[in-house]
Image (cartoon, one colour):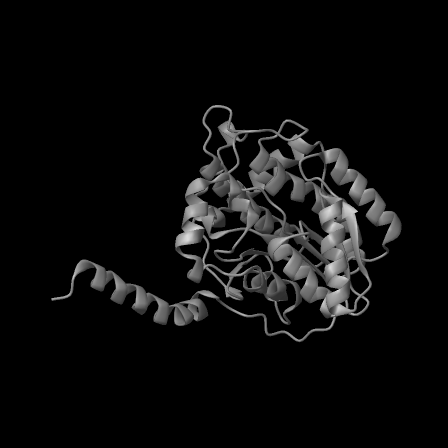
Length: 316
């Protein structure tokens, strides 16, 4: 008979042997496009670390002029220096952008528009996840303010340049977590009831609804937009959740690396023949299903209008 320790040892051995196959499966899709981006300008938010950094590295390798837009300029410069050294592309720049402060977003946009005459790809990648209740500089709940409203405003301010540079793309990094999200118009700021986990899910649903409505409004302009789920990725975003940190450790063999997690962002940014799929949602470098709430056009339009009111802006 095999004792308990012997059984545990056998199971451990089986898991060890199976791990490479599990990793291959869970690594997901790979961006197959060989598109070159010489003469193209890209802005990526939060590209000083994680999948944003890997996305910036790949696009720099393709020859793009890459603007790393991040709050921590020192970390951004370190990432940019690494990317320049690794790719040989010296056109990797860092500009300060704090998505939790609309003044910072406007300052970034003003500087960008003064310095850059083109913008071909905007990747709204940065975000916060499962953080304790807090508010942005403008009084917005942090998940809503950073993950949705910050990128909503940034896209609004840069859209003119995107249209002038068409064909151009807006890529919004969402999450499978959107299936648990709900747009609670009666409590958008989470002041009546708050859960860090659900607030993240709500904001990721907002990303998908924003993409859907933006695509409708951009028809015929040459600018297309896509939302995506990067997969379960090793990330600093989980630092606020002890449970998620534990899950990351227990299932590390099945969690994507940042490079693997960047593949769908890259696919949406550069893959050929995606124009007819503007407004759609992708996972593992292919179109993926969206929750019923994520397909609700009425909610998408109302969220758009409420977002404009909160930010004090008007779209064309």
